[in-house]
Each structure stands twice: as C-alpha cells, then as structure tokens.
Length: 261
Image (tube, rainbow, N blue to C red):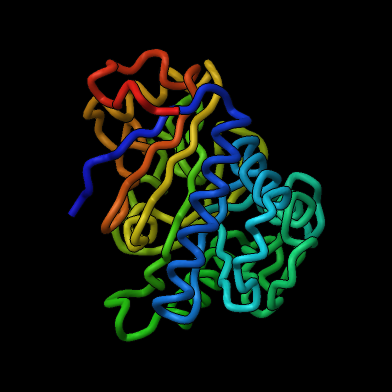
C-alpha cells in the first residue's frame, strides 16, 4: 500500500543536506533504541553525497552507534572496485571512512572485477541473495525492512537505476536486477527494483536544483511509475520528498506547507 508523499522544502541545497542529515541521525538513533540496530539504504549522486558530507560534519553524528548500523545501496555503477565513479567509493570518501562502521555490515553492491566477474545479472542475483540472507521472519519478504531508504531523483524522474520505460522499472518479482543500456553513463548498472524499495519503512526522495523541478512536478502529479519511476517509490509508513526551493519551483503550493524552512 502506498503512503501519500509528504514534502519538506528548504531554501537551498546546503540547508536541505544539513536538515536531511539531522533527520537521518534521529531516525537511526530511534531505530537503534527500539530494535538494537538500524538499516539504511544509501544513494549516490550530488544530493546523496551532499547529505553524507553534511552528516560527516554534524556533531550529532556521535549519537549513532556506528557498529550497529547496516548500510545497503539502492544502485551502483557496474565498474571495478575503487573506481571513483562508483557510489560506494564516493560514500567512503564523504563519510564512511571517517566513522567506526562494522565492515561486515557495509553491503556494497558487487564490482565488475568481483566474484561475478563482468556478468552484471549474476552480480545482481548475488546482491539479492545478500538481502534475502539479511531478511528475518519478521520482514515478511526477501529483503530486510529498511529503516530509511534514500533515493536521488534524476531530471528524467529516474530513481536508483530505474529509468523510464526500461525493463528494470517493470520488474515485479526480483529485488535486484542488472541494467543494460542505461541512458546515463555508465550504461551497465545494478539496481534495487520497486518491490525492494517499497519494503522500506521510510523512503526519502532527494531533489535539489532547477534541473529537478520538472521531474518533481511530474512524479508528484499522479504520473505512472513506468513513465516516471520516482512516482512508484514509496515507503510502508512514510514517503518523504526533501527538496530545495529550486526543485520545488514547479509544484503547486497546495502540496506543501508555506512554513517549510
């Protein structure tokens, strides 16, 4: 069942990153207090990396028990380990290398020089198996119930590596798939599917900049998920759009409260 999206609009992308980082710290601490651990799905791109950099700079980051945090990824560029274009490489630089995570709980998506070699479909299947192993009976499905799953929204409304009209966005069964021929380089990628995304308690969609304004307007206007994948991304208990004023510029004001900071 989809949850109606809530919108929070910030003045600029820096404020948005800081506020989102503060919100994420709170969610992780709450989850660890109630269940002992927390699980978060990270996103790459400029907004995802901006949030991680803001989290790294936030004094409150020390409230998190980093050893009891599971990190997953929504998608990855299928490139060799350590490639600067890989989301995990950028995340390590922005935050992960500076906090005391348990390496066994950092679940990077496979690289093109990993155990599956250059077979992206085998790599996707291996990640799906990792997710299934981490899912407990209480999760009622093949992936853990993530506390927060973050997604950057592309100018074409893509989220993770689910691009409009491509086969991956139509997937209703598998939780992770290989992407061939993505319209954005590199063409070969690994991505969570909409069924895996919707297993999360909360899904946060991040959009900042004028180039995201049309995508936000389309996704929030009732568009179909095949044409606008961002429209199909929602959480079990909450769906949150975190935007800056530029990305919200084409939205009707009735969608969000004027008091948003």
